[in-house]
Length: 154
Image (cartoon, rainbow, N blue to C red; front, side, top):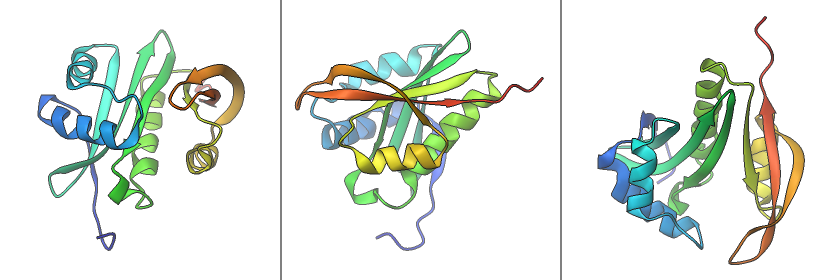
């Protein structure tokens, strides 16, 4: 399945909600509901994107932007499409989008046990900047705060 796959990044809309909720259920112990995802799609401060392959949603990311800061809410890739570059493509798109909006930085939390995600974030330039004790549940784990700072254009 992983040979010669092509992925397109699109802004998430109502038609993507059901497939995105399925990815949530496959990836997270406390998945967002379809109604929660729809609220974010309709929120003018939120920016959610899907990765599609042959018309199927294979991953998504969403972020909330306020003032000059963006925060990644979620980044998820369907298990059968992991290690195909989908996460990197989605996160790269979110970073480019944030930079183009003139944001100062983009930040996220990740489980310290999620070594693959931490490796991806580090390769893309994110730095470890803090820890949120007990941030995650099921299982209980701290949240490592990682941030990518954008260089000043002026």
